[in-house]
Length: 503
Image (cartoon, rainbow, N blue to C red; front, top):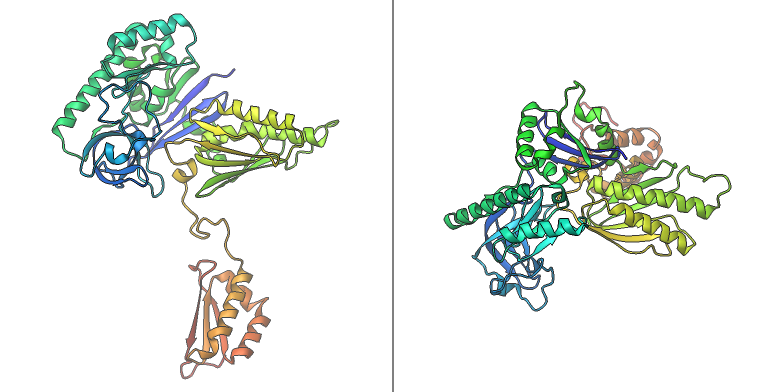
């Protein structure tokens, strides 16, 4: 198995961090100075409005848009006992008006960046993440990663946490803590406890809205959350950031400090690792499969649809059509999981696999999709494949998709993916002239349109224009305008000046 590599491109106006697993680009993160993520930041906010019908509230946290707070994300202030377990999303029996009121100042943390027209999603269940542990000051809970299976490690880590955690607070121990020494875990817990004490001190002296804590920047955050035994190297192309990263890793993860490398090659780092080509591929609507089939991604407002096509794949000799289709679907299931993670597609997703007759084959494809999605840290829920080959799934995300972050809606088609053909616009113009041309003031009708439309009307469709001239009894002059949208046109009645030649 190939080692995982974290590649950091910090030598430029934006920071980009790529995670490569088994020689495949699995995740891409980017951060720009004017659009830094707010996820993880802690604010003292002020409640603006409470919406009982939605069981939610809008909170001013000092950002451009008011943040959104669900009732299920609010700790009940009337509960004298520490919360036993993790926060529940259920709001049965609890009314949001009993939890918050307009004008109230509350401590909140961003869990989801603003996306589109929506503001940030926030919670009052604050957490502070470290490399080995996550501190939860408002939840009385101790959790040990399920991936730590050895009882001796679990007992050791639980003992450390129980010795240090304050009453009513909790910790979640991450998988990497299994390899960490007791001293390293205690040191990180102590750091997070001091950090929380500082936040609470600032809360007492500042009025809302104000940011009390900013999470680590992209480079440090990705390294904090991903640097583990299976990551062989972290390669970075900027010397100042390289030194900064080594200091951070040396403080919190000293056993990994020698894995930090400076990219000395003159070739741009993302070119050297083939990442630029993969980014371009991730922005394309269609993704080819090794077998010759393809995936087609259509991201809409409500959901993302993924269509699986056989393409040029006709199967191997001796295989039936059902076997060929199943093989393509299994390959597609693995690629879909990789592409969802890389593109950071979230929300509702519909996958249209190629129809399979046998239930056993549908089960094989479903199992492969489930297995492939386990590599993704974002939570996903999937339904079984229907007889028509459809799978409904949802995937949680905290940031906008790669497409939304790197691209804009097409100015020509407005996001439709198409615009009217020159012939269609030509006939629209002629129909409009027939409607109103006879009543227009002036000696002739002037048409201005996109050059492709004008060329069509002055060329192959000249006979249709001549028929319209006869109908309205006015000459028609057509000219192309380079700056016009393909669907835009202007029709005006014009009076001919003395001395002008007749049309």
